[in-house]
Length: 241
Image (cartoon, rainbow, N blue to C red):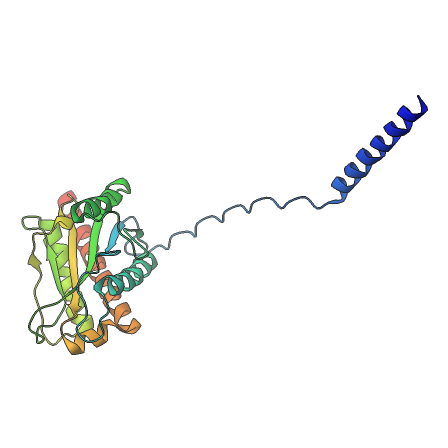
């Protein structure tokens, strides 16, 4: 009996030590509560949701700059990020199709469809797809905006962005907005594809590679969208009266 009790005492003592050690040990920290998203800025685009597409990505590099060898997909992403910031500062809610070097599918149609689905799921009001241009002749230059043929609101949006880019960037060649047959413009919302400049033009390539010019391009696109929004308000007011 004594031997049994002696062994029992050792077991009880060990249990007590474990309990004391557990009580003294610091408790693991609770997971941090995610911070609430910053309140949207009020501005001329408050109430608008814009789908911003950085064209290409992943294995699809797009055009390649003639002198630097930089892929279009990388410049598109930088301009798109600057556009997101500019739009949010004007009150818009922005949905990005990509914020890294990625693609949704190796199949081009499947990749574009996935991007368009983001706009539909997020109830986007406008779509802006950011691209860079190229041509066999190195003399071609200047930004150009494309819209879906037969879509009046898209044509108006393309026109206001085209004019804003001409005013802000003062390109050597002033182009006009044009209708274009692009799958990315197939949504029912006003949609445009912006060719920000020519990577095949030596002077324009140098500009497009700089952060300052990328921001100027983005701000010009934003200004064009703001002008479009103001015209929509005027038209709505005229219809109501």
